[in-house]
Image (cartoon, rainbow, N blue to C red; front, top):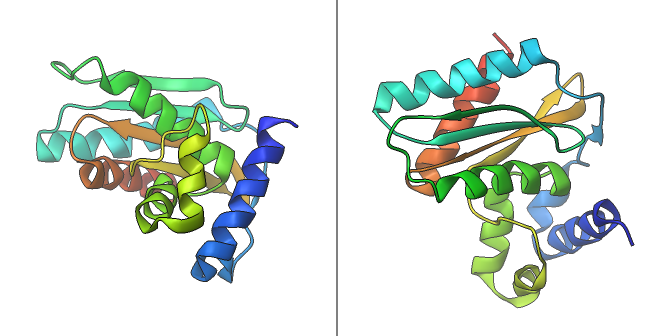
Length: 162
């Protein structure tokens, strides 16, 4: 079974465990994010981090999971790099904000099955990047509190629509 097939199966389990997630079908994967689009996302995320004086890693991956851009702010702890990359990859693979996976685990029950998977980072701070109704990539941020990481990621996503 491929990882994307497994991710889709787990996403269905999440929908069953959290009916609010069933309100809309996740978008399909699309063509990879362009460098110009990634630059817009990165600029928005960087601006949010600078505004709040937060030192973080920001990673943008394309729809195939390849790193398109990476920014490490000065004095960011090195342990945040694999977390930022993992958040981006997890958001891409599951077509969900990583907060949804974190919440599923926190709720217990069937959500605890997620803890048995390898290569996922179920921590807030990863978001899929959607354009023209298709997932073209994802952003992952790590270095401050997870809610702050997510704030930076959201600012990046919002910059794409400007």
